[in-house]
Length: 141
Image (cartoon, rainbow, N blue to C red; front, side, top):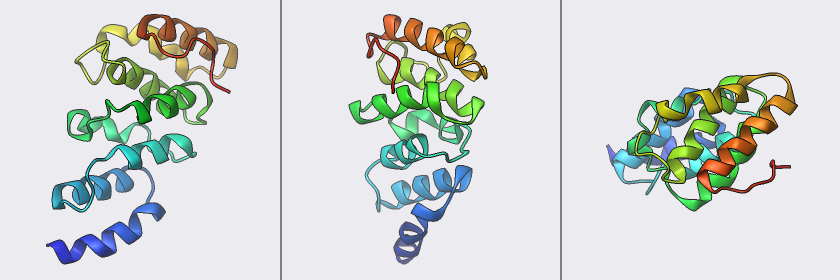
């Protein structure tokens, strides 16, 4: 099983969406990656249409690291995919430990506007989220 880790690790940067998360999680399970953070952060920083695929097992991804907060903030306003923006906004509540619920259902009305096409609406929603989470108060560049 461990022999499979090398080719999977080589393929990881080229994979997209759910396949990227699945490969990353398999590598974590095999002990070839410590955490799934870097895979998810890479998806948030690029235009990968993962559509929040990492949220299928958010507790296993252990995304409560400081390194995942900034990419989540940026993606919540700027990612091209509405579902990714919404999921990144929900992740901010979990990453900042505002909730123990990785899906942040309690805050759903606050992060749903991040899926809107109007950037002004997204920035207003982001500002509200920042106020509640204690995150960066300005909209990300």
